Length: 314
Image (cartoon, rainbow, N blue to C red):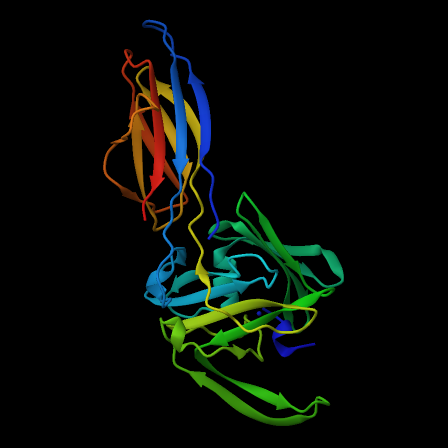
């Protein structure tokens, strides 16, 4: 079993249209308002060279920054994606992974009822792991963009190799017969620029690998158990906003709730005619401070229809 196997211890996005018929509350003249929530999710791919400033999807909070790359080696494009992670104090590679992945499930080897799970920032990304006595092993990584799903599973067709850049730790060297040779040290300063990254197949699991400012981690699926070189990744675009709910809260107000990505800016806009060329901004741009944004909209009784869009800003 490769040492890094043990313990991990572009494309187009469609417009989404949602139609609602809002009936008035008691009192006043009868009218109905057709709300069409048009969620626009543009994103901009940054120019090379890739740096931390190119990364669009960040999670966590703190002054330290690290990047995580996932490379499926499945022949699809983009070949790999990169996310960013912020923290203070001590954080491991596994801390970064579970903070980014929307769903992380861990199953204890030999005990299917002994499971644990974590919820992270990117709902499109789901991972599963197996807990062994020596640590956790990454089994599968699924990325579902809504238009396509990418999935690679461990054990049968290959393994997820864990590669790193930046940090310091001691590890043991063995010969081809697994005879101990010596203990040596990995030590590299971090960098926020991809061209300065020199990937190293990690001899320790991600739960034992402490991140430093400027760290890079990569998970690359070794198809047919043949490791592949890490190529420069594409910045993972933020998850597109989605309408969670819409409800009438008074005779003249409605409440719109959208899912959002922390740190991303959004602008709510409207127009009365979908054929019109321009949209009108409703308030100022808003930087998401949580996983959802709530908008209270005042509607005039004379308004026959109004269309709203939540636009993700570059």
